[in-house]
Length: 243
Ligand code: PEP
Image (cartoon, rainbow, N blue to C red; front, side):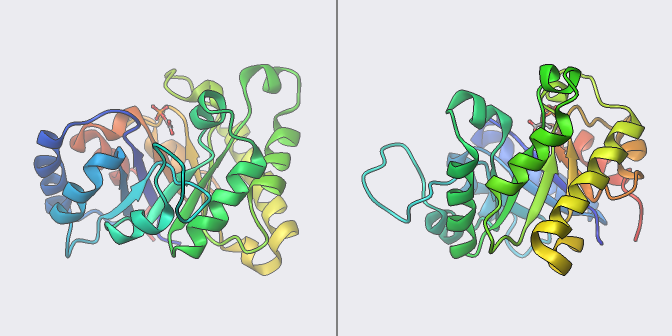
């Protein structure tokens, strides 16, 4: 599988930064599939800057309904219309800040699929859950209840305690969790589950990317802070194994 390196800009970035960032990515012509997920207002500028480019565009969220009285929300159809091909769903910051449940996320995933967007669905345990020996059960439950029957897309394993902290799990822990996620996906979706890419996310940086990306069943990375600088994001992509 071609590695996937997705960048989650979160609530960062400016319109003024888009052109230079997009140009740097396009000039590098990276081997992995790279997906940039900026805040909603930057999507049209990115779509324009990346037109006719293999660099893909994603959003960080969508609503479960196609339209209606949902002030401040954005539909999957509109994201598709303005040029997004992907959408991050179930990020731990959304689960925590907006109280999103697994059922909410499953509904958004279904909406994304109906709009022909590829969902990148995040799962991961908190530090307290890991310390209590519950990490595997938590992630299995998130997968079972956040992924609808019709799921096709990408899963990102993001231990909450590793996001933005500079800490990462050991290679053995990432390997064990990705193996467990693979088993869960195959149990849930049969043969389709063997092909779902599983990204690792949480403090991926240029200096640890190659190690993390070489681990079994790590199909790429979901990158937060280090995706904000094109040079760092590209350095992470350069760490991906060639296929
Ligand atoms: C993220 O928020 O998805 C993430 C992985 O952040 P960071 O790389 O900054 O830890």
